[in-house]
Structure formats: structure tokens, C-alpha cells
Image 1 (cartoon, rainbow, N blue to C red):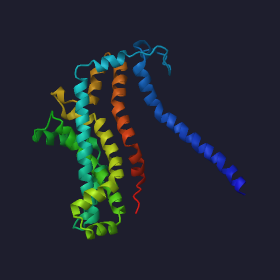
Image 2: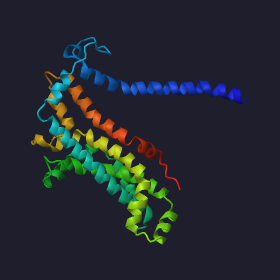
Image 3: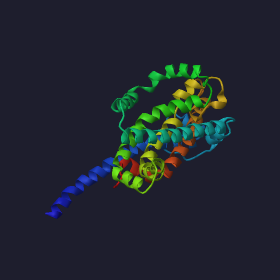
Image 4: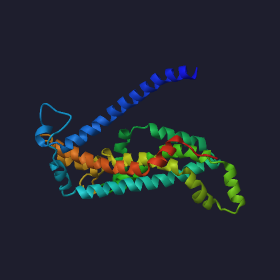
Length: 281
């Protein structure tokens, strides 16, 4: 009987693995084509018969990208924006999730519903109002005009996700800490924070990717001071309607992808447990 079940499960398992492999190939192919195009010489990129390989890899596109005068500044600006968004949104979301989970106050349910509604509003619909808001606050052409909106848009998702982690921590643990003489602040940062850290890592990945890849806000709020531009804006240097430098665009996109991959590798272990929502008693 067990042998029969194993035979039945084996084709199903093979089909699932084949489907997963096919999906992985479909997802990874655009990245492969981007990296391949970055290494292709100009003649092969502009060829009317594209091939999924190159026999003459070249670093010319990367030399043009890294030799671009403002590229290093764009890279640093992107790091500042993404880092500030990750740290600020993580800390605020942690405190807010603790408040809405551990404390009872009026309009708490209304506040949670507002978080959900905020996630449903398209970013494009708020770009123009945000532009006037940043203009009136004197934040146009500054990195603050990119940091503040991304923190605001990251918070609803982060709070909702961290709320589940905070709720999963037994209240008996909090009571035991108070009996042992721990203050509320000590419990918050020395006991609760480490338990919720996997969730914070998971939310930080989404916040980092959103801020790092942002083009809409950077194009809308950084108007005249190019020294405050971020990496996505660097792509416009190589894209010209009459004569686009596709090799430069692909090389710049490849360089932009590297920090995201590095960040993902660094937090991979905690990200898996964070997405699983595993907080054990």
C-alpha cells in the first residue's frame, strides 16, 4: 500500500518540480537578458537577429556607465534614501504595531481599516497632491521629498504584517518580564524586538526594493537639482529617443540590481522565517 502511494506521489511531485522549474526560468529570463545585453557589444545589441548568447563579451557598456560623471553620486543618493526608508519605516511600524496590538483605545479598529484603505490607493493618483505638498514644504529637489513619501507608503503594509508577529508573542511572556522587574521599555527592546525581528526583516526587504527602484517620485520631485537624483534617473542619461544607448541602459540596470541582491542575501535567513510568520511560544 505504501509502495502504491509512493508511485502515485512520484509523478505528481515530478510535475510540481517541473512546473516550479519552468516558472523560475520564465521569471529569471528577463534578468538573464538584461545581463547578457550589458555584456554584448553594440553591434550585437542593435542586430536584427538577437541571439541568447554572445561570443564576444565586452565591458564597454559598464565603462560608459561607471565613467559617467554623476553616477557615483546617484548611487550614494539611492543608498541614503533606501537606508533611511528601511530604518525609519521599520522602527515606526514596530512601535505602531505594538500599540494597536497591546493597547485598547478608541478608534483602534478604524485606524486599522484606514491602513488597509491607504494600501488600496494607487501611487500615481497621489503623485500630483504630493508634489504640491512637497513644494509648499520646501522639500522639492531634496532627498527628503523621496524619503518621506516612501516611509508613508511603506508603513501600512509593515504595520499590518508586524501586527501578526506582535500578537503571536504570548502576553504571559510580557507579564513574566514585568514580574521580574523589567520596565515596559526594556521589554519592548530587549524581549519583544528580537522576537519580531524576522517580520521586520521581511518588511524591510519590500521597503528597500520600493525605495531603491523608485522612478516616479524621483522624476516628479527632483526637477532642477540633478545632484539630488537617484540611480533610476541615471538611466535617462543613456536613453535618448533618437539614439538610445541600450548597452548603457542594461549595464546601469545590472549595476542597480547588485545592491538589491546583496541586501537579499544578507537577510535571506531571517526573511524566510519572517514570511512564514513563525514566532514560537
